[in-house]
Image: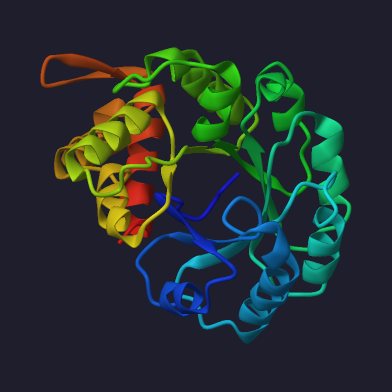
Length: 279
């Protein structure tokens, strides 16, 4: 699946008009208007109307999505129905625990709209293959680390030690089914050093980008999940070497004393594609 960049995925409460207006000009790859956790129960209906109005009026630089309430709540179905005839780019489904939930969303979202499934409960972890294999408009798995850590009752850890198996599993399932994988949020938005470290960890594990809770995190995420100059230089060297006349038909070649195979060529081409797509 060829997907647009999702290095920085910023959540904004749909009940906050100023936040919505600001989102139009932010440098994040994706802006998510949130109807779920960021909105109090008494403000749900008003926030829904604001999200629909924002989608209809357009003018957003980032790709625009809406996180609806779960379908088993009193608001979820109405959220989905209200967005069904809007030009929304993507819908985020919270607390997805099985493939049936993915299919329920898929059958109701507008044609051409992508679906991102949030993985944030222990039950979801053991249904992840079925969830990722649901197909249709499903485009990404989003790991909800806050909810997951709470439900697993994990202790605090600066390097997310208790969550490492689930970081790896989410990426593996996404790759197995041609989906993007989006890492969870970092709550201490004023701690730029720790945020950078967690972004680096997420990229090390293979995530495509990170969920954000504050605009100050955008630049750091964009930098962390984009190819470095060294990676771009190396990728260009690999592509050039395989394009040389003496490399025709060869499955492996030597570049500066290192054996490089065709699988490395595919990875290099992906790096160069990212460098072209990500400003």
